[in-house]
Image (tube, rainbow, N blue to C red):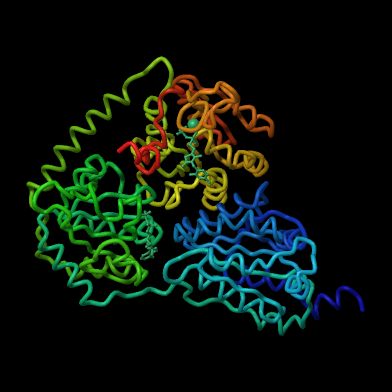
Length: 574
Ligand code: ADP
Ligand code: TZD
Ligand code: MG
């Protein structure tokens, strides 16, 4: 039989996976080759899928997760078995923690050998390992089930609370053949993968009544609100209600940070004082001090600790996870906020002016103070003088993506750099994890084609730094700005015994810019704001892979950045 005839009559596991992905409008795969994935990736490329190949699976996985957050479609990552799978697993778990939809698809060894532990090449019971760390995990053993496997993975990733899904594909599956027409019919085009979830009218009414009764209402927008792509509804709600709002880190830009109702510059005041707090796609986890304690006003005034919460979320079990939720509203944010907009009616009265006025007063004071600090130009650049430049660059390029990781390099960027467009800020997320930098940057550039600025602490950058080769290989418009303060938090720590260097200190004056030059990108050092501005402007104008080694005063940071209070040594001192 000639190959031609065979091609016409049969298909195989490789092509069924490719066809199932394409049928579901998936056009990009983030991956790292090896048996049996190498051939799969070659065939995917031949069939028109965009394949972005990384240097380490964790970054391919992070890229898939970021793509999921930006697009609302599950990001796809392919890894090889055992070690490749494990390298990707951190990204899968992180995506699940962040509620980002992604699918980690891994090749695996043969069941017969794995289950008897007979020592196959890269043997591991991957499905069992993945299960507790993701939202759902599936394995496909027969070619005719590939369609179902991919469909289940897609639905699981994007419906309800989004998250990471693991799909286990044993090597033998790829080579299985079946009749081409039967294969085609076995594939499933998923209809309405993330169905709208309409909130109960009485739940909305309960929440609206509570909002109406508030004297000091506050809205908190989280990354779930950004993910929901309900930008217009949210804007309408915030502006119609007149309620001050706080964006969580990745919700910055959902409304422009310079919006008159943003209470970011009076954050501690509003958290301590608000009487009714409406959470929209934000969990009351450690990032919001679990909704209790000093942050929330315990001990200050007679309403101490008496805030009432409204929680708008797609997960019905999120409410009451930390404190009582007086008015849970369960549904997708688009449907919920539209329902609020209707239920508020035409006679809505805006919050009392003593509340909004008090916030405005504090905001003005803090913004003036911030402007003074930003205007300073110390002889050695510090976080403020460097970030003032980044702040202006983002203002001039509001559609650019800002990736951000580090400790001080993260906290200062979050508070100093205003965002103007939704879903443009990608950062360390719920875990505060280092190493997302280059994976997220690659994803943002590949998926959107927009310029990306990645502000990374020198430690943070090190976790994914080798992916600058990936950035150069695909010639992506990514400008990495390494905030180089010679180490973790600071470069000044010493070892009291005077033997090896302290654990937080790196090689001083490291030339990170050479890393980018090694692969043909543009690498440059910036010692002052003028040099930093010039390099950033050039990077954005040229769209060329760039790394700016921004030299930051090694004494400028603080231990753990803003989360010093979580440090057990600090807690002991209290
Ligand atoms: P942040 O870190 O910004 O505070 P979190 O990650 O803690 O945000 O919270 C995100 C929340 O958003 C999760 O509880 C998740 O269930 C919810 N969520 C995600 N997507 C949607 C959606 N489309 N509709 C409603 N809620 C959503
Ligand atoms: N490992 C992982 C995966 N995530 C982490 N968050 C940490 C370790 C601990 N960690 C932080 O929380 S921040 C940080 C580490 C190692 C690096 C801070 O140093 P940096 O930033 O150079 O990136 P600054 O600007 O010097 O503070
Ligand atoms: Mg550092």
